[in-house]
Length: 74
Image (cartoon, rainbow, N blue to C red; front, side, top):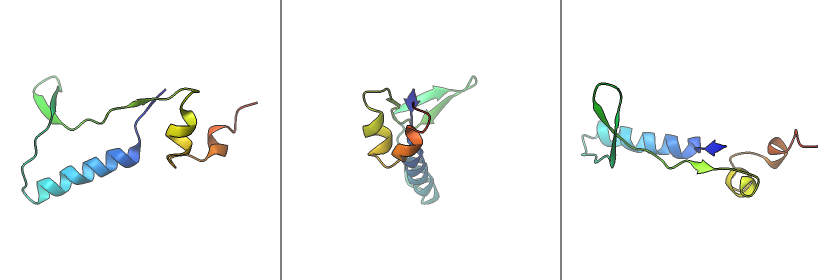
């Protein structure tokens, strides 16, 4: 599956919001077209999670508890 850590997403959103509130300049690395215009965007790289890295990405990072990840495993 693809994983985007909401903690990192919210931290980036907060950083951008504070910069805008303080009238500080922002430089978006990319632009995403929304069907009408190119919108300056701050994108975080998603992580591909599979059986090889599920523990390091989801459990050791503190995002999920091990018992929640493996509760349906038999």
